[in-house]
Length: 153
Image (cartoon, rainbow, N blue to C red; front, side):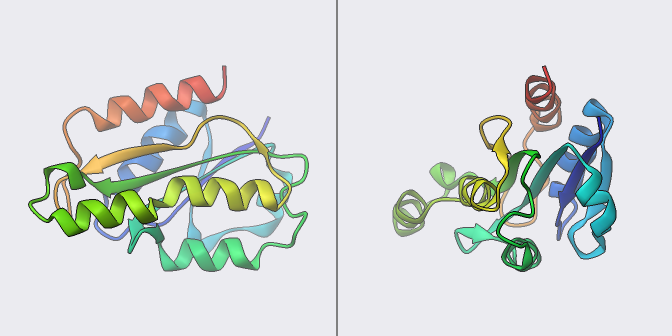
């Protein structure tokens, strides 16, 4: 079984989660801007992760997903994760309202993966960072490893 974790990271937080997931499941780790298409086609399981940016997937991840053919993920099991700020701890009521209204990246990515022919491997996950740049909240690496284990059980 071949597993890939494809990710985008700006401040290193999403990369830390991607590394933890990849190590836990024995996956090949690949930045979104360096995807090897032959390896992607050969993978049985593909996990995508990026930070939530303006309530959506990051630009690079969005571009990758839009560029996939409609059936590009047929026969593959897929899942997604994002990193995000804990808006419930943010003083802005408007930000909390907008986050609840517009959502986060992981669920949107997962829907796109399924629309491209992927079979849902497990529920999308999210991991919290402090503020915009991090660091990750305490315990998030361990939570990522647990999520990854559940995906491949």
